[in-house]
Image (cartoon, rainbow, N blue to C red; front, side):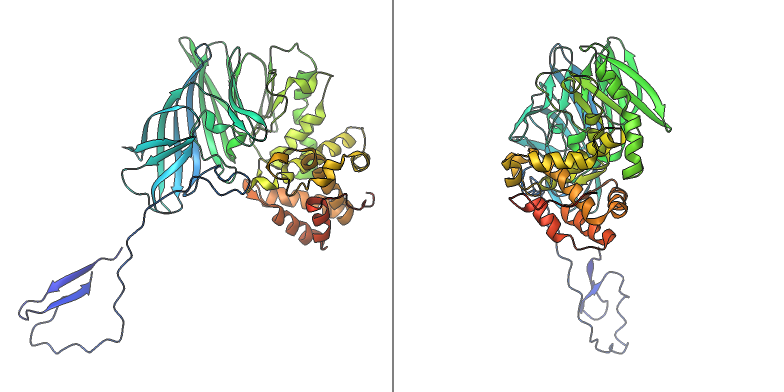
Length: 488
């Protein structure tokens, strides 16, 4: 910033104003300077440091996430004692201010904060419900990076959200599970909990010796000291916070390597060896097929985790290592669910939502991947799967527009099945060559980023050379069954 100064010129008694760096005044004998037509520079406006917003402004979940900064990396170090159901942690957040900040929020549910520093200096902190409000000793200037370190502890509790019921950190008989969509991360570490602020992660999870702690990304080693073992994981691709996970317990571990990347599978010992193990072992085969239709696999590791807990009856595409309920394998092998969750590694994880309303982009494309995999694996064709759903879906599916489902229907049958039918209708409309080019271009163009339905429609029109507004309007936003498309 350029500062002004005032100079008292010797021998004249005249007080002159000037800018820093201006040459000194001449003597009394010097001729008077010619008048200048240039207007004097306006003084710089003082900075106005403001509180970052308590929410990113998502229309469906206005309080999710926070404004005023962008996170680049989290380092999460936690120690969990299942016997006491107590978690102790230190999380370091590396971020950059997007505005001049006097204070900012992080999402943290339930746990007790013991200390906060910003750039190494103690910072004031307070709570407003599940918001941690941090006030640094000095304001943070837009564009500058900063580092926050938060020490905390307590008994983690799950969140009760309006969509999936209980999500977040769950205590189990032997350990714990942290899992859930659309939110869960804030139950075990402070975070900007919205998919629009993706970051890389390092996890160090310390648990009693004899237990395994599985998380996202590449296994980074483990070490045991006394009665405690620390498991390290590194996710180097940007990840939406709800895709982070930790699963603590006793597992059958399978490790290997595929295409130069580590493979790490974990199946709970509560299940006898069998269908779950065989299904998870097919992860790399399924992923290789999906590469042929979506383009290169976007992450540095493969894997899957199977859990057995009555509170979790779903699978979630936690980045690089999906978590599956054992119920998916109760009737035998099930590679369809593996295809669905691994398809999310492209659509949902690498290409992430900018807003929750566009969830069909995740679930519709993953559902269609199930149909493609079934056909590839010698089962029913994608056309047959579409035909059955078009003829047999309930009236509620057609009354609920997947492109604008509303919060209560965010994970409804319409989002999945009508979302998948929308993808098929696009394929019929543009033909196979353009269709598969659209999928590969979408994945490549938006890798590690966030995207919207409008951007998907624009890309589909550009690649196909066709006007597709009517198709997407009917399939995504209409409240009655669209006309049946042709066949592929």
